[in-house]
Image (tube, rainbow, N blue to C red; front, top):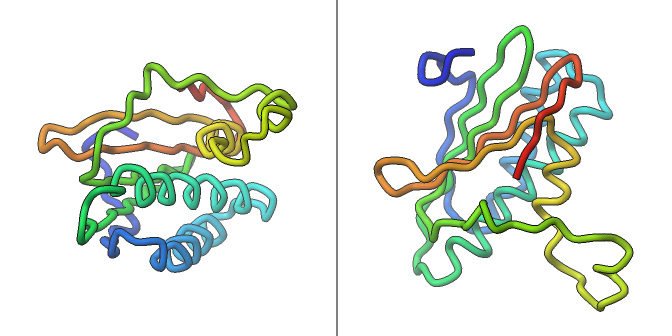
Length: 152
């Protein structure tokens, strides 16, 4: 898939609050299923998209009232399913992210902060960039063959 040349199978803009998460989960699950991913991979895609959208809504939009929409673009190819999650919230310092270590994370009493960890372990590739219009795009890719090069 050449970036910028693919046409999304799904393009949806939803209100940027957590009430929209159920709809986003249903859409991504439906697309992943109809393009032939096995159930255990569909489950991973659903978890990753839910975590990514939750992060945007809870963190990037924390100080924005009303919150801007979250945009979901889903692209498919013979090799992969790509989900772009676009928000207009506060940028995330992706370069300084340090994944939690387990069980130390839990032992220290932390009950949150595992969203990106889950995304990294559910998807094959993940990239983040701030776009020219100052929106943020988190790109999640699940390959049909399971090839993995996810990086934070």
